[in-house]
Amino acid sequence: MPLLSHPLDLMMLEAGKVTIASKCVNELPIRNICSEADVNSGMFNYYFSSKENFYFSLIESIYNELFAYVDAVFNLNDNAILQLKNCLDRMIEFTAIKDNLMLSIYYDILLLNKSLIAGISKIFTQKSMLIDLIENCRKEEYFTKNFRHWIIDMITSLKNLPRLLKKNV
Image 1 (cartoon, one colour):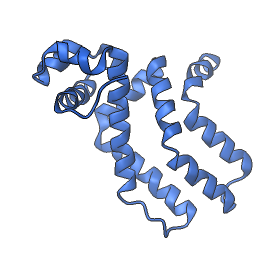
Image 2 (cartoon, one colour; image 1 turned 90 degrees about the vertical axis):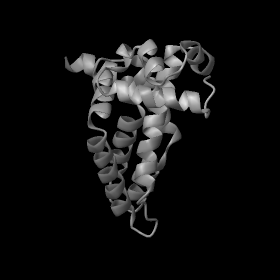
Image 3 (cartoon, one colour; image 1 turned 135 degrees about the vertical axis):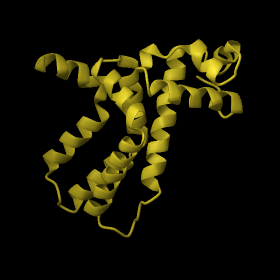
Image 4 (cartoon, one colour; image 1 turned 45 degrees about the vertical axis):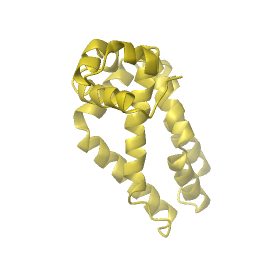
């Protein structure tokens, strides 16, 4: 597991965010990231130990920004459907703001990058705010029970995307 919360690892993650905006995750050149962060490549191994750990930490950092962006306007006094709408609106806004960055991630998902898909699935499962909002909407009878299962499966089962895509190709 990567060692985090030291300025050097954060500098490498920020350099990774800049780099990923123009390349897909699998094409992230670790030497270039270390150079851009002005960090010795030995520090990369010390903090992340592998490219896969770095990728997961990078994606987790990006999605933590996304969830913080959503949380910034979250209002518990709104009804469930308005909370869900605001949450989805903020997620879309974040994607627009981080356009190239998010497009690179989506591109990697379409390329069936299994470690990326597993990481995103894990992050969304841990950050259950969206799932909780959907469940609250169902409880308030905005959705049918089947809709809840469909949307939760869609969000948390990104790891099944390769199987689903192969059937549709």
